Length: 151
Image (cartoon, rainbow, N blue to C red; front, side, top):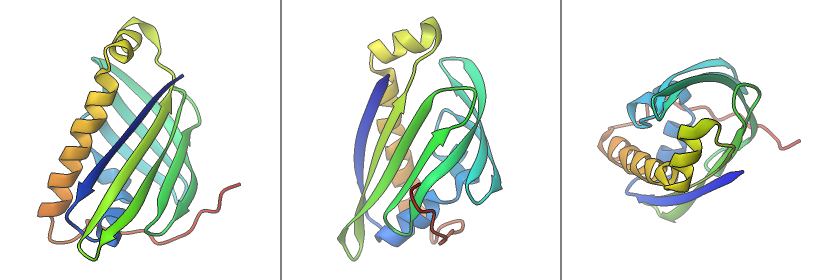
């Protein structure tokens, strides 16, 4: 199992960063490996991703979600991964977004990419894309303020 941990500071209030992150269908606008995400219900979504030229589809479940604090998920099929994004208030106008992803590379391409840290560099780049996206947006593209307690 591989693990990626990255953070980025964004010049927006924590609520704006969190609200945007709850809009899963907007992820292709700033996450380079995401082709599409379809929200099935409040805690389930279907992902299509392309990593190292290989396209994969899988379903994911939100396993924990608390407004302005965290969103955690795990895959249900197709690929083995889980993760959490946490949101930390730095000031009234800035926040830190921290991402932790645990995943199981499959096949030669993914295993080689993992060994060469392509996955970590990709997440770091995508967080920079999120920073640019959220700082330029006048408002989040939506928000979900429900709560998903941890089982």
